[in-house]
Length: 156
Image 1: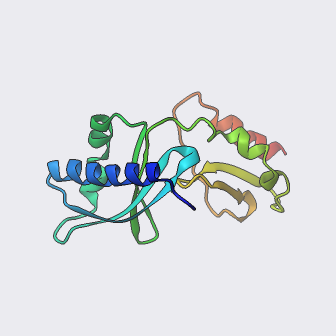
Image 2: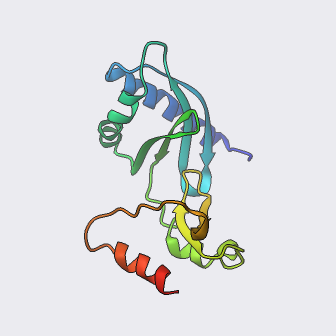
Image 3: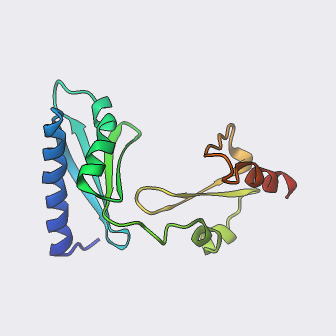
């Protein structure tokens, strides 16, 4: 992907800002690289705690840092053995379930029971075959349609 100078400058700003805010909480991190997803206005940073520091405080302080920065999303997550932080300055309106359900990738999927779960942090569609899942946990607040969604899959 060819990044513009604007994207590179913004990514460097976020690297400095993230390190500064974690150091304020006495957490030292090293940012090893980043990915910019321009159409989602999202930055994903690969990081690791500095020697002598643990991962848990990185997760524990993320909500404090998010509210201080005033960003829509500041989300640390682990993928395999690597640690990442996703930063979005704006709400990603196109990340809607309907866009997956209407996509060619979903409609032409060869799964027995295709289940659209959403998007990952890089903006890729996450679609699985419900038949192949051993376990599925559906969580959310009361009245948000968890039972209705499961009943729709059972009835079809």
